[in-house]
Each structure stands twice: as C-alpha cells, then as structure tokens.
Image (cartoon, rainbow, N blue to C red; front, side, top):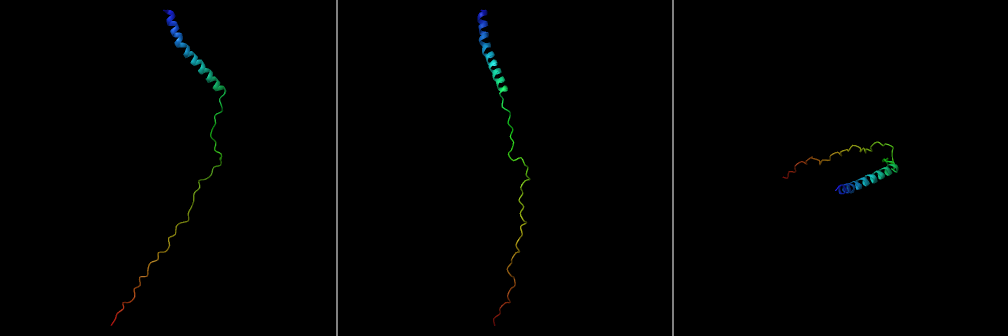
Amino acid sequence: MADASLSKSILITAPVVAAAVISLIFGVNQAMNSEPTQTFTPLNTTTRPPTTTTRPPTTTAPATTASTTSAAPVTTH
C-alpha cells in the first residue's frame, strides 16, 4: 500500500518539478539574452511655439441706404 501512495505522489510531483525547472531555465535564458528596453524618442527634438494664425480685424462696409428725399407732390389743375 505504501508503494501505491509513493508512486502517486511521484506522479503528481514530477510534472510540477519539471515545469518549475523548465520555467527557471527559460527565465535565466531570457534574463541573459534580454534586449535593451527601447524608449520612444521623437525625431524632431526642437520645441516649437504653437502656430497661431492672426487675421486682420474684420471691417464692416459702410451701409448704403437708399435716399429718402421725396419729390414735391405734383399737383395738376
């Protein structure tokens, strides 16, 4: 009965140990061969002021009104 219990615990423990060893190997390998971290640097590093477009002030045209002079009334005899 002890052999069955021992073999059962070995069957459960072996894959866990193997996974831990494989994970450790890959972790060490990745740490040794890691690429340097890349940071984004813009191509144009000079700072420019924001571009603002200024328009000349809008001028209103003088209002042209129709002449309000009325002609003298025409009287016929």
